[in-house]
Structure formats: structure tokens, C-alpha cells
Image 1 (cartoon, rainbow, N blue to C red):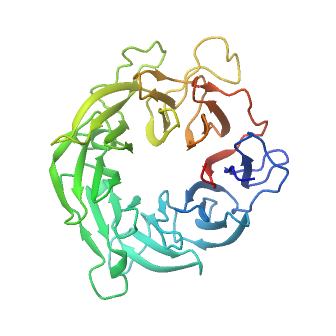
Image 2: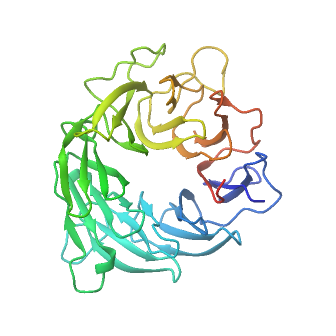
Image 3: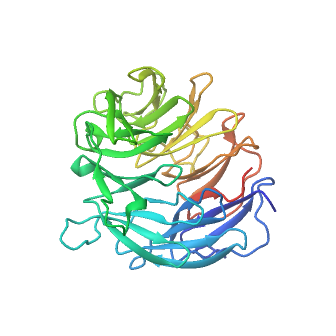
Length: 391
């Protein structure tokens, strides 16, 4: 089977135990093979660049571990315990190391917060790099620079992995106008830092370009409605969030009283230009995924829920945390489902999108933006979904 997808099952449900379910995405079927062990409560999945290894975060209490999965043998190669919980891990290079943001980690003589450097082969933490209050890590594609984001401190920190254990400076502050920076999208030597702004207790959401060769800002911040997650497609940057001053659901027929915004930015202009702003579901936006045919899936958490998909799904509005934006026409579809969106996976050869929403695994036909004719009859309790083959 060369079209494999894995979905993390966080709880025991029926005959299913916590672990990674293996799915044949070409046929949308569950093969008759056992699950891959991935700890007591596997949550988000971090694929390596060549998919030979994936990392799975086990969020079980007192565990806080990274599970290292070999996708060729479909087996667990061991785990690495972190000192405290994380919600952000990156694996830039096939052979590691991985980097995990641990906001409450203890580093002697420094404020709480560290980026833990993890050797995924030996299963050891090889360095703890003090970054106060760090919540998110993002890496350049070549792994030469890792950025840590401390939104509560308005701080972005650059980590230079080549300097670890050399006596040279490992970290340096990134200059720029930051207002609760939460993450960045990287293209070449430019990082587009997303400032959450008012949604996170600050003042103004924006995007700030940073030159990764100098760690200096490029131009002024570009104001947007909200900025907690983004997606870069060529020279077009999509940014999602909520604006306290612009939250009306204009143009949508919905019982929801507040809506989020998707801002579309042209990065080729100087400064970058917001070309359109689209109404989407509210909530804290965290996930993006682009389908083969240009359907942009946007997922959030703790959004406004309308109706109940399990009771009277055909009677009245049903609404949750998923929005689908047609990049060709500008139209938005909000599928009739409930719950947080915690997993998205698109494909380059299939007109389908795997979505984990409300703990359930859904398969969408992206040519129609509706659920496909085949759905997996599985119990709920899923958290994330990722392809482990290139297709």
C-alpha cells in the first residue's frame, strides 16, 4: 500500500485503542493491519521532510513525550520525554534533530521557557535552549534557522543550530514591530511573522516580514483583521484570525453572531498588500490545507457552534469550525458539522481532503466541497491526520 495516511486515536473507543490508525487513502479504507503504538494519548503529528520518520506528541498526563515512528516498518522506534507540555514541534531534516517549544521548561538562571533539542535517533534531549515563554517553533526548510515565538512577551528569537555546543551565540533576538507574535511562514530567506494583536490581548494584528540573513524587519507591518495562522501559496499569503472591530457575519446566512476573517495578501508588492478580506467561521484559527484543485481548508477551535450534526442534521443550520475557501472564485463554504478542527491533510493526486473535526474523521470531495460518498465507519476520538507517503 503506497497511499498511506495515519490518524491519531487519542482514546479507547470500542475495539480501538490509542495509537495510529493506518488508512489507504487511494481507496478510503482501513486495511486489516494493527495500529501503530504511539503512547497513551497521541495527539498532533509532525512529519519529517522525507516522511521516513514522523513524530507524534503523547499528551498523556505525566508523559509529555515525543513518540518516534518509522513509517517504513510502521513501528514505534522509541520516545523522548519532555520536561513539560508542548503544542509545537518541528523536524526540519530527515535525520533530526527535532525542536520542541516548552513554555514552562526550567533553564538554570533564566526565566521559564526553552526550546528542547531532541535527537530522534538516540532518543535524548541534547540541549535546552532558554527562550522565555516560548510557545511555538518554526524552522527554515534547511534547518539552518529555527524561530521561537513568545507572544506574551512580544518576542521572536532566532536559534542557530550550528552554534549549539560551540561556544558561539546560539540565540539572538529578532528585530521588528511585534504585537503578540504567534508563528511565521517562511519563503527562502524571508519570514512572514504573524502578530496576533488584539485577539491575543494586544493592539493590532499584522504581518511583519523579516530577513533571515540579518534578522532585521523588511518594511513596516501590514495590518490585517486577525493573524493566528497562515498559509503561503507561491507569492500569495493567506492569514486567518478574528478582529474585535470587524466580526460581523456579513454576506452569510447564519445564526452565529460573530465571524472570523481570512485576509489575502500579495507579497510581491512593497509593502505587501491586502487584496481581499473574506468572512469565515470564528474561533482560534490554527490549521490550513490547500487541496489539489485550489480549495483552501481553514480550521479553528472554540468557534461558535450552531445546531447539532448528531441530532436533526437535516433540520436547520449546522455549523462548526471548518471553512472552505475557493481560491478561484472567492466563495466560502461552511460544511454542516460541529466541533474543533484538529487535523487536515490534502493530496497532490487526489481530489479529497481528510479532516478531523469534533474527534471524527471526515473525507471531503474537494470538487464539490461536501463529504465524499465513502466515509470510514470508525468510532470517534481522533485528533490529527497526516499522509506518510507522497501522493
